[in-house]
Image 1: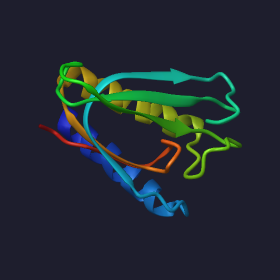
Image 2 (image 1 turned 90 degrees about the horizontal axis):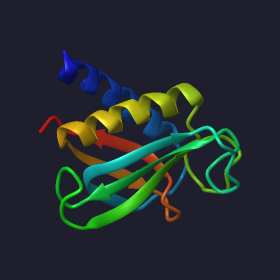
Image 3 (image 1 turned 90 degrees about the vertical axis):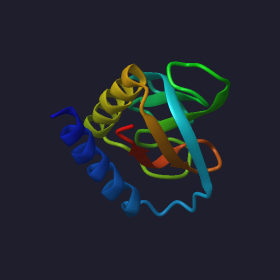
Length: 123
């Protein structure tokens, strides 16, 4: 059941990514070390909050930090897709599950680190 839910959410995130007009060129691979959802406004990552995720080279925060990525909300200064509140909450839940289960992730981001496409692998 959990894999089915992850697959469904990943498919939705995949389709959202194709709606973006951002010219992103950075691909970040690794494992979710930590993720945080905030509804606090931020001038760079959106006025309705964002999801901040730290990526490691190994599961469960082992190895070194690869990067930090952001799923932004509306009116941020970061180019790329603007995630609705429901989308940010869904992304946060999926990434939290990935962190708890040591799942591999792949993000496509803009130069500023804002995500426009996310993949979560079931292994």
